[in-house]
Length: 298
Image (tube, rainbow, N blue to C red; front, side, top):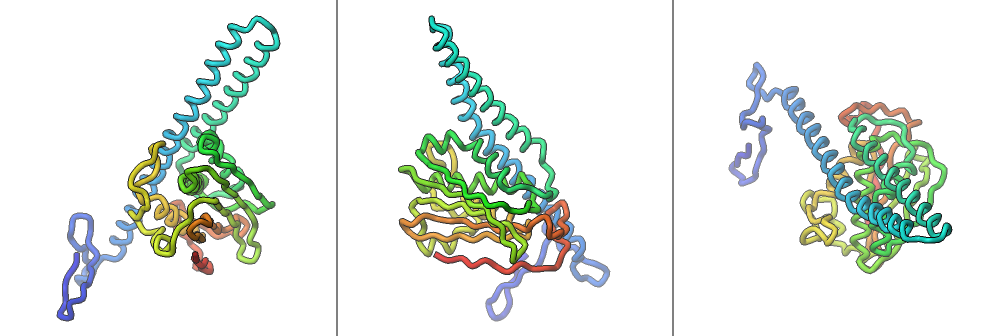
């Protein structure tokens, strides 16, 4: 609830969902009740983000499965028409490869659907990156995107795998959309021993951003897109805001560097599992230790 004062400034009073302020015995707001409401709303938001991420995965893999099925059908027809053993052997090999790819895509999607827990576990970030790339491989090929990996040996990070995969897919799709004529994405994982963190970088060779856009990039509802692209992705303006919330809930940091014509790089720092910072199921850290901020620059 908002109220004015004599100077014209505005003050805000916390309100419950039904518009009434909950008060204790002395007429003061019931802080514990308000905190419970905030935690409940945060849990609902996190669940909505997880469902949205799963929906994005299903939409992406629909195209992937269609490609796999077309491969199976075409080579099955070729094998049936072939009169020589060599052609039939080639057809069987291609069908087998397509079937194995379909199995890998299915396993990745089912893993994401089953693991809806928000608990944080020791996780190899390289495995999360590879799983994300399985789901986006054909899309990257279609748009002539070359993906390079620079993975240095790093300790496991203390993360919710599904949530970090959601961030990765979001950043990868954004990077692909920033390179309409094709380009290069560099994925880098490296340890940050000084801060007991693991660093994950997604760098593209795309159009880049000007200083004004860069300053607003993590604002909720802000978007440089007018709507979904030809693949049905983008345009909500919620992606990067949600990414930042997820990273900060992990007690991590996210930084973006960009300039027009020079591409964009998102760098994420996540605590290592070895640090032993306890984190509750809703992402609340029980440790008072604060991490140094990452600078943001163009």
